[in-house]
Amino acid sequence: MKNDLYDIKQNLSKTDLFFLKNLYLLRCLTIKQAYNSFYKDSISNISKFVDTKLNKLIKENLIEEVLFNRDYIALFLTKKGVDLVKEYYNIPIEIFDGKTKKITKGYYTATQLKMLPKLIPHQVHLNQFILDFQNIYNYKKMKFNWEYFDEKYVSKYFSIRPDGLISFLGVDFFLEMDMSSESKLQLLDKWKHYRTFLTSNNYLNNPKKIVVFFIIENTNNLDNRKKIVKSTAAQILLDLFNNNFEIVIGSKNELLLKLFNDIIPSIQQTNSKIEELKSILQTNHKFNVSNAYPLKHSLNNSDYEFYVRKIDKENNIVVENGVLQEYFLDYFIPDSLSVINRIAYNSQNINVFKYYFKRDFKYIVVVEDIKKIYEELYLHDLTTEKNVYYTTIDRLKNFKFYEALIQFDSLGRAYSFTNPQLINRNYLNIV
Image 1 (cartoon, rainbow, N blue to C red):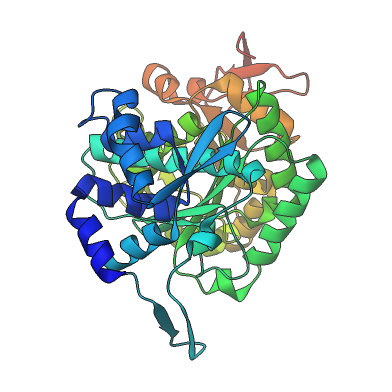
Image 2 (tube, rainbow, N blue to C red):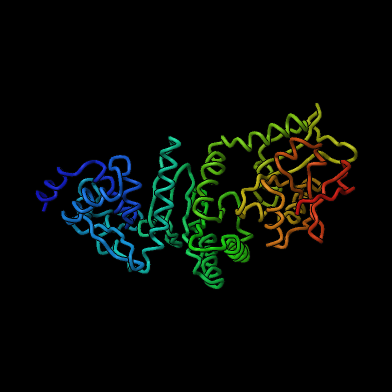
């Protein structure tokens, strides 16, 4: 067998071997995925790829085709294909677990990687997220290292099993692929499993932040599906969101856009939106902006991002027009839930803060779109929360500070303010 594998390996390119490795890691790929992600730059079209490359790999008995959804084909590794990948990439035959003192098999067989045809579409969509992530990562020439683990390879979290996991920059991104087929009751059950996990030592002793990407596919009404997912997640988990746990919900393209435009830059502290926001607060409105983390204990252990205040030469907080110039502030990423947690529990957090400092505070949420944040608040019955104000970077840039802030009344009308005391209302044609 070894000589046979050696002879086959000698006739394969590095691209072929890399493709076979990814087929092992991803479990399966469609012909289109295989071509677009691994051969498009070297073979002019998909028909030529099938004729000159795919058929060769099938003939060598390294991969096989499995029909699903009537006329779609998925590619899987054969036993020989797994053996080749295992040998070339030095995948261990056995692994010794220092904690359990047990020896386990270090690889998956071709049989273990196979799945029923009805399960293949779910895996194909999940794989496309990973392939697109990899393409954007390469296009942007990102420098950080990352690892992907399919559900079969996720072992560090023994009390939860996401569909996949991408790990980088100190964050584990759980991937949950939603084909829009789970009912409300099934979603509630899923979040109950997450609640069990989030109260377990497996999570509490974990040093990494966890962000769940709930990837919605296979629906003609994305907004409606988002609402169902958000409402069920909030019903079971809302009190548990903090700086170490987040859920972001959306289509594949939406989530990848948020990941590379907002989340990764924020982790790396290079988010241009956040830097612009801080600059406007400092330059236009003369606020001191600092991290709110040192005050976390006095905020009911809630993870507000920024502490914003005006201070005098003696480092005392300034009072202007009878209003203490002190705020806590977050930048809201649409379709996420940790800021929704802080809005929902803001009154409780104020009570704890008041115990320590004998005063209230006001909470500002900076959003991309006022109308959309109202829709989020309406979904969670949070439209009229006291001491919570909403604004945008553009409003902060173009208005006086008190004019930039917005709240909503019980009829769903948005209003700003015409005086620093935040009392007199100016109704806006927004919502």
